[in-house]
Length: 210
Image (cartoon, rainbow, N blue to C red):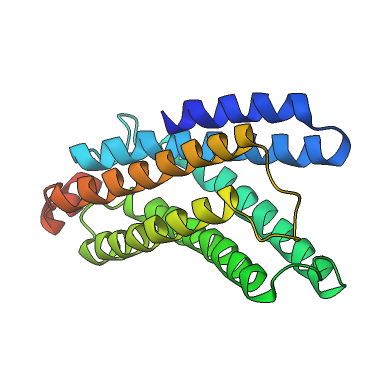
């Protein structure tokens, strides 16, 4: 549902954007859709105890290789946008806004980017080695953090700091609220699923790899 919502949001944005905004928004949606879609499929394999790194022919799983190649570009794009906006802010943009609210927005936004990087990076290693107990614990920690950051970011998107950006229309507020609720629910469901998934034995993992 979250992947479908991202696609629908990208189409909606395409009709209301142009130029550089259209290019950047479209690129972000495409990379996010691919990364999240592949992560969801790989998470399903992990929860079922099927290591995707080994196929019947003994070659690396194509989905995992694509995921590892795509998600760093998504994080890099979002980090670059965060940095450019931060520089604009230091240059005087948003001087009429409440500085505390703007600072909170940028901390939550930056935290969300770091959280996404952590979840995807830990997952990329864990999906290839489902028996790694420490990797599972790290993934649970960052999914928990990401859920909290997603709640905060949803609030910031629906009610951005006054004077920093134009007040969003009601339609945009509803869209951001819907996307935020889906993100929070999906993250919490993933967190719970990893918690209750049976732990694979290390010896079994070694045997399969051998």
